Length: 614
Image (tube, rainbow, N blue to C red; front, side, top):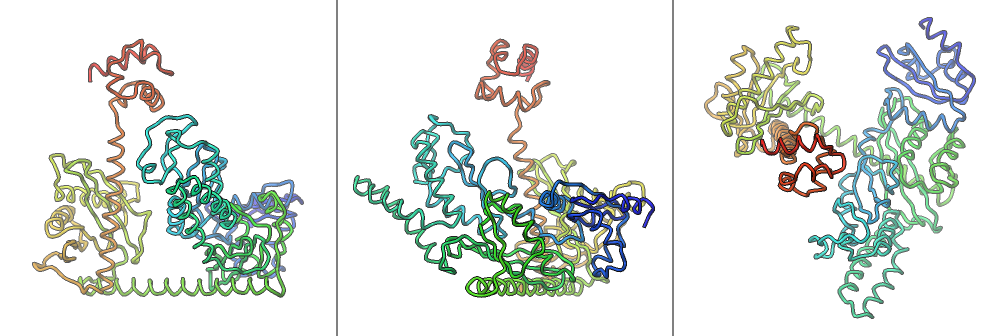
């Protein structure tokens, strides 16, 4: 230990709080909480404790630490969880890719709410449901809800009494047209309440009300409305029929089970509402091989329920937790009511926990089996490519290039990278083509991007350029296209004097063109090598198209107002809101322009002069 670290350990207070251990590069490698900071942190550095291999390895890397004192252990727990998410320390148990889990958001703060799929949970007063691990299932759920409930999908800022023209969704029965005041706020919000009940898994509570509405509509001879409500009823009843009764009581529970193999743990959650299983989900956690079940479950509870939109009154666990009382207090604060963490010993609840644990084990087996199969396929693909292309070395790094343009405008190029057969997203690069201006010319565009990429790489390797973005060269370069594109790329490569194998992949027949061979190479359709070059080619195409669309969208949003000195986004928005069109702004006088909020006399004169000149 350094003298500074020893001094910090000696000065630790005997109070609750959070501690952060830092490595040689001052990166946070572990975050923990303690009832007594002094006792807990000092215990890591006592050899007599007999620490696990993980703790020993962590302590060896610690060069500095800091701490934050809190008023209570619950406050420490909340802060610990936030810091783990912020720093993603290597030695903490953490949810894999937890930042990407989607939520279903109901914008209840809006006069006429919408249903959205979002990736972040904000403190904006909206209702959130999730998080969910299956993004496709979330989209299907939202699609189903919009099908049976005519919720608006537009982004308009609608206020009661608005008189817009209804869109197509209204005419096909997919929206109640609040923008045209064809539905009052109370009726619309009643429908949103029903949507929220469905998302909570309380479908049965809606059925009596819908049946009453259907009968009333039929009695009033409103047969189309009655038929629409009938379809809603049938859709909801089909969901209820698929839900399994797992308990005789009508309580809300989450049931957790877990399993672990190596450094990956899988926690399975069954969501039980009113005694029925309404859904289940599994979550993967990164952990060390000597992490015990209590640490895994504790870490999961903290990270999952800090984001979860719904916290039930009872959570069933496969084993008791030493931090159970603190977690119950914290969860109760989040829920706004008591939460009980139970470890059932016998009976129906025990059997339910065992069933969930068995499901967790099966899910993890399936995931590991799938990952092992992918690893075998990647290894086979790299081996097949080396053999088919007669390469002297295995392909560790592969780069692919593609060109995208619309009739010669906004020409862009993409570079995507595979390392050991897997996408290296942080190595992806994109280029705006500078030298091609007279219409589409993929050959010249390809020459430019290859020249720029490898010329920059040579400068970085020689130290002439201090950057590292292009320093590493690939073992193989794939060009999206046939002989023409390949020859253009080879011309730039040869002008720089580098020796890297280049190939071209023509899409029509998936022919591989190689330097020095007149005839293309055609790999078998089931070849893993062919699958690999197809995947990287398609990824390069996707990446180029995405960048091109961004530029096109930016260009389409551009306006003559953008070039006027003193007119920024805020003033531009105010002008468009006041006048409606650029044509109307052109026709306005200095006095009329000065009436717009934020537009002074001087700015108004600048606008008039600029537009006349334009």
